[in-house]
Image 1: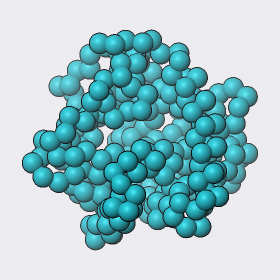
Image 2 (image 1 turned 120 degrees about the horizontal axis):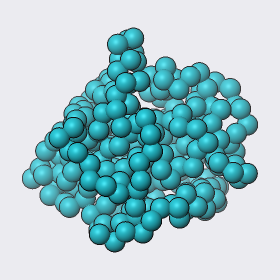
Image 3 (image 1 turned 180 degrees about the vertical axis):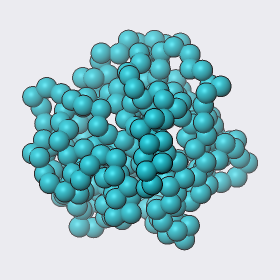
Image 4 (image 1 turned 90 degrees about the horizontal axis):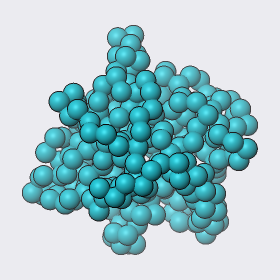
Length: 274
C-alpha cells in the first residue's frame, strides 16, 4: 500500500477496494463453498461462521494468502496471527443486517492491535448490503448493549448502545476479489440485501499482531500466518481434508474454549431488549 493509503488507514480506521485476487479466483471460492453447501446443507453456514478455516483446507489457504497477509502486515507489523474467520452471506430480500458495532468489544484483547480483512466473493454494493463504516470512530471504545435483534447476523447480539450518526457513514463498495481492512475498534455495520436475486457473500478474516494476547491468564487459540511466534496463543493446525475427524474434534474443543473467553467479555455488556 502507498504511504497515502497507510495515512488514510491511521486517520480513518479503514481502507477499502484493495485488490487481492481476480474475479475468477473469487468465483472459484464461491463454487467451492456452494459445493460444500450442496453436500452438507445451508446450516453449514453456522459451522463456517467461526474459524471455518480449521475445517476446510481451501479456507485455510485464503487466511494464509500472501496477497492478503502482506497488506495486513503493513499495518500490524511483521508478526501476524489469525484470531478468527467467518462468512457473512445475505440472501436477496432477507432481513439480515449487521448492527453498528466495534469488533474488539468482545474479543478480549490486551491491546487494540487487530483488524478485519473483509474479502468480497460476490459484488458488495449499497443495494446488496455492503459494509458501512464510520470514519475516525476507531480511537476509543463506545458503550455497547446486547439486544439480540432477530435480524442481527452477530452471534452475540451486541450493538452500539447510542444512536449512530449515519450521515457520516461510508459505503465500502467492493468487486469480487477486493477487500477492505478495518481497525478492530472501528464502528461498522451493514444493511439488508435489497437485490431481487443473488447473495452477497463475504469472508471476514480477523488478524491480530503477533505480540497481542487475551486479557487475563487464559490463553486463546490462533493461527500463525506470518513471522515469529511470540507464544501468546495456542497455535491451530491446518486440516488435511474437508471435515477431517481430527480437525472436527480440535475445532469443537477450540470453539468451546474460545466461547468461554468471548462470553466473559459479553457478560460485561448491559442487556437491552429494545
